[in-house]
Image (cartoon, rainbow, N blue to C red):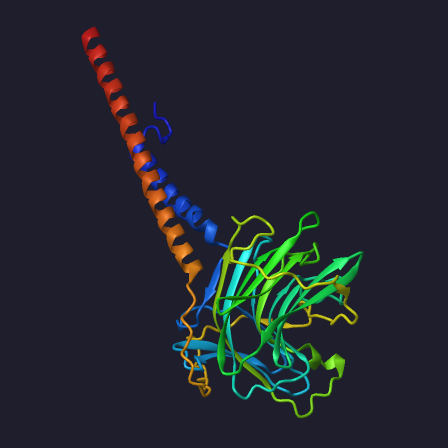
Length: 370
């Protein structure tokens, strides 16, 4: 009588199947801790860039970094044509945990100071049911100063606080770090901001709307006053041109809520936050053209002319913490997989020896009984 084959009758097949399963499963488990980290330095032509949110005829191109900085950077353009108002790189998929956001930006020497907001980085929580919604956190340049705006909601009313981050310098690379712990309905959050290693501002308390998806990150240029429905007077105002580089996002989930990994925090602005008097309509997925960014090595990309320098030395590049995390996690996953395969091989080897010993005893018993 013949029997259907089973793994017990074919230990070699069982060993092979177990080894393959471990090799497939184990490495995927390793880098899970780095899944919420992202890094873009624009140096590799093969690096896939984030999605782009372009409204009008603006663009984001990769070329030589200006200001005496070595390597490449992303040039962001928003033309003053009556219909363009933003060109941003969009990084979604972040969870609601604590994160450190690091990036560098550069305002060219011909930057035109204007009494309007130009948002250069924002954290946006999509709220499809409310057209009043503003970014929960926004870094902008207004006139000649950097500003941080934080928004939250109390009794269905949008609240806003504005924090001054100091004067903006032209022809200068600014290296920013934002340590953000998002608030929840039952616990306050925190924001700590450094520029070029110096703490320039902080916020304690509510910092999002506590509904919808966790905030995602956008970097580039967004000028709300140029939205067509605002009918703003843009005559004589120059195009918006700036550069961004060294984007690095890492999860700091180990930090306690409300604490910041940075050194000393500056006090929060005095006084109670006042309600926002004229909320700016913000974009929803339907109002912005979300396009997949073409890899800068896939098609010819126009070179970006380097802006004149002011004689300052370039700042040292930011450490790619997410890359180190990914490398370490991948190495751990590979070691785990190899160890798992070795353990399974040892188990199968023991089972094989036992089976062979049992067979030998049975043969001896049958021989003695004949």
